Image (cartoon, rainbow, N blue to C red; front, side):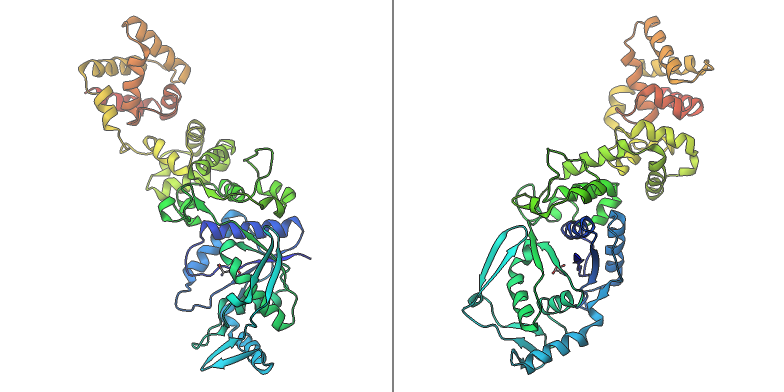
Length: 427
Ligand code: GLU
């Protein structure tokens, strides 16, 4: 049975690159009905923090990557590593140097393995120094405890980033020394920025949590991570996790580049927002509105659903939704000063707004269709272009020069608020 693991170090938030590693291991396991196991590599006690661990676990859950079995913690297994190191000393394969335990690397050998993504890879042991297993402070070195645990967990496949490629021959030497069979290895291309440099803060957020805060949907995030190193073929870009589980084949990762393109991620997010039913967006939007300090109780759910309907085709992120639709939730919304200057400040536009306000104030029917009729009628009677009414009205009501269809948004905003804002802008 396939057994894979994800082995984060809780010394920081879940990085996009680590999330992708987790995702491909998870896919590999789920595709084969195998097990996906978590191992917490918290050997650096000074830098490992509980809040990071919690964040990593919650980001994984948010992405929909569930794990099997109880996670294991390396910090609880220091004795196991020491015992294994001592056994290697007894067997003449390692030596002590003060408090440290060091593994002897035999020179002049070629270590070869068949990488699931790269194919045959080989290293010469002349390039590999003797390996520290236990450091003098008593903590285990990564390459050693990694192998002890991968053997203990019966891991069959190790899928990780190319940054670990040079660790693999060292780990294979440990498997040999322990008399264990090495698992299969697959090393994925590292995620780069669009400029070809290693992904960093400079390219945008690097922690999954930041994207969550910025209003990305987990479905879009996970879909995007899938495209970083793998392609479902036929130029497809939108693919659900469920479907990916079915068709995933690690061999397809060969030669695929992994360039982090925030625009593509944003586009994908927009696609997921559009296709999500308003009802499902409702709680997510409410959460974002509340986080932004908006009073969600000011509008009831029915109205909020209509607002979502108006903006879900426009907002590429949930946060963008909040800034686009802020004028529904308070009278203190963001105002585009240039728009005010252009459309509201002249005496003629104030007259237009006053007249339009009077006309629609007298109509009973505040539906979008009727409001539009009133607007067209006034334009005809006053020899105006409809746009001369529409633009100032939009700025007066929303503070913005663009947004949802004017008459639809007026209907949702309601007669009282519309008249109040038109009066204010025309005074
Ligand atoms: N803790 C290591 C990392 O985060 C794990 C590497 C591995 O998968 O072996 O890079």
